[in-house]
Length: 123
Image (tube, rainbow, N blue to C red):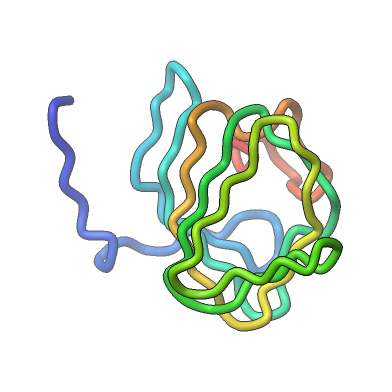
C-alpha cells in the first residue's frame, strides 16, 4: 500500500467491550501492531484502572474533556498527550463526550488488561 484515503466522517463507530468506548480504526500495521484510530468516550466513561502500554501512546484531542484524576491532568481540544512505553498511568474519565486521535507506535498492551473481555479490543 503506497497511499490510503479514508473519509472518517463516513465510517461507523465500533463499540469496544469497555462500556462507553468506541473507535474508528484508521490504520494498523499488522507486523508491528502500530495503529492510528479515532477514539470516542461517552461522558462518564473511561479507563477504570492504572495500566501500562507495550509501546508509546500519542493522543491529540479533537473535542471534549478527558481527565486523569490521579495526576490532575485535563486534556481539552488541542491538547497533545504522550505516554511513554511502560509508564503506568490512569485511571481516566471523560467529563464530556470526548473524541481524540490516538497513535501507538507498536502493540497496545503487554497483555490484555482486565477492562476488556476479549483480545481483539486490546489490539
